[in-house]
Amino acid sequence: MEIDETRLNREIDALATFSDAEAPAVTRVVFSEQDGKARAWLKQRFLEAGLAVREDAVGNTFANWPGSRPDLPAVATGSHVDAIPHAGKYDGVVGVLGGLEAIRALQRSGFKPERSIELIVFTSEEPTRFGLGCLGSRLMSGTLAPSAAAALRDADGDTLETVRQRAGFSGSLESVRVTVGAYSAFVELHIEQGPMLEQEKIPLGLVTHIAAPASFRITVEGEGGHAGGRLMPGRRDALCAAAEIILAVERAALATRAIDTVGTVGICQVHPGAVNSIPSRVQLSVDLRDTDVDRRGQVQRAINAACGDVGERRGVSVTTETINADLPAQSSPEILAALTTACEAEGIGFRQMVSRAYHDSSFMARIAPIAMLFIPCRGGVSHRPDEYSSPEEISRGVRVLARALAFLAGGTENGTEG
Ligand code: GLV
Ligand code: MN
Ligand code: MN
Image 1 (cartoon, helix red, strand yellow):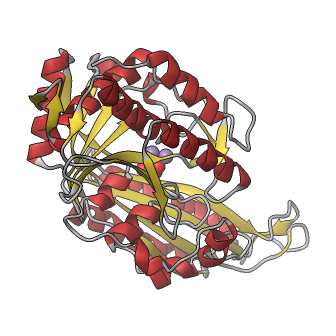
Image 2 (cartoon, protein in one colour):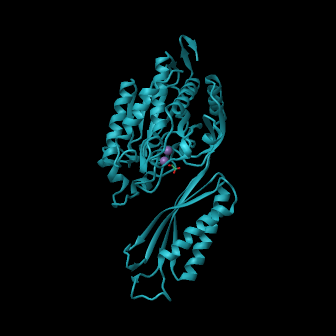
Image 3 (cartoon, protein in one colour):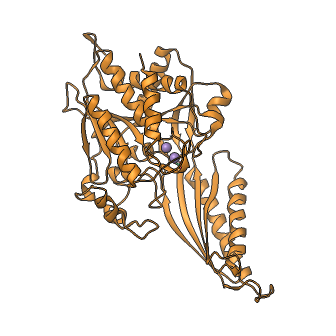
């Protein structure tokens, strides 16, 4: 399978210029001006490849290569192009531009698919703007009610409903849902975002499971006051209480002794946030993940118990609001077999692995058989400007993706059955 590595990497660099951060950092928040420019640029690339482009009401974008049997459920690939603040240029992008290059490579090879092959760019895989990730795939799969999605608010208080319409996406959010069976397979190419492949010098990872993510918001309310006038005894400092809770999250995640349990407090908002004012209110965002939902539940219960204890000891109120508590996803044995055959045909080594990051595949799994293909990233680094995968590593992933798509779509190659 011949990949145009030079063009693909030029396109990855070009997409990274649509950013609100200075290079090499990429910040591209959903429905920002830069996100709009990136979308327009991508649509041009899809049209140049002869694909039929359509968008749904939340901005999920579909680029379709019609097969000889468009009546059959299509085979899909894709990922996202939104990027968290100060991210790199590969997360999500490799699955979108790599998916496009896989389609172009198949076109160049003379392959004619039987099932249509569809490239999907999902809206807001990252939770940056609305506090909840995978908005596009959640709506497509019916995991998130359209009314709940519409009511999500960004930091300015604007609802998703308002913001998506402002970005030019109208129509009802109900219409985003896709029926079970609309796709016969969904395969997502992505950087690993962890160190395993690089450490083991294995070029590709075949993802068998995606860990179950949960996130919740903890609000601590204490008593504020003057940092000089108010003496230490009897203070009800919300940030000191929150600090204990943050450490309790770490303790609870470590306590399972399972490598697949992770717990992170990534946001800590302090009110009023003045150097000479005792914090009266703190909001924490907690991210918990595990391949085993029961074990994740144990961790959550341990955190709840710690919140109760801290609240009582320190005389502060602690409330918890669940943002999401999702299920793990499993890959389809048939797609894993197709990926295995493709790796063997290309002579590329691989191992099976678990994804601890969540992906749009987690939600596509509700409506279609899925699997993911991971490529290594330097040092396992992601969500940072120094995120990096080499052109060769990306090409290997795209070659295997292209072969697997061809196999899953069926069709003819140089006049022979594929
Ligand atoms: C996706 O970006 C994740 O946080 O796993
Ligand atoms: Mn990400
Ligand atoms: Mn991603």
